[in-house]
Image (tube, rainbow, N blue to C red):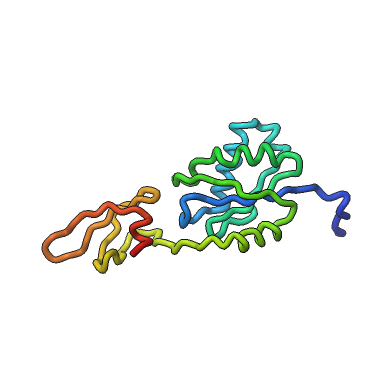
Length: 166
């Protein structure tokens, strides 16, 4: 089967967006469902079908999304309305729109945004201020930890910035 010539191909636009808070792993499939729900609730099923949104990649805190050319305005309006993805509170900020994926990847490189270190996604032990602590629960960017010790176990309430600084 031969490929279609460029004049007959569907024109697409690619959107570069950043997922906040940084460091939260986002599954492509769950993000796709959240985006489809946001577009449908804001613009309706007809626009959703005409837009044909897709999630191309999600890596290093950035996502590359796709839609049909001519619907990028409605798509970029609907993207920030996504507030949760798979029971995690997130915010999505649109940075750029382009006709190619490669130009968006070059833009990510040119931003020079330092990547934040990944924190453990499961409960376990961490080191904070030179002390061993155990994560008991997490809620978004907040962590509840208990300091390990022989006599006194101190319960600490930390944020992501506290753990990144240590």
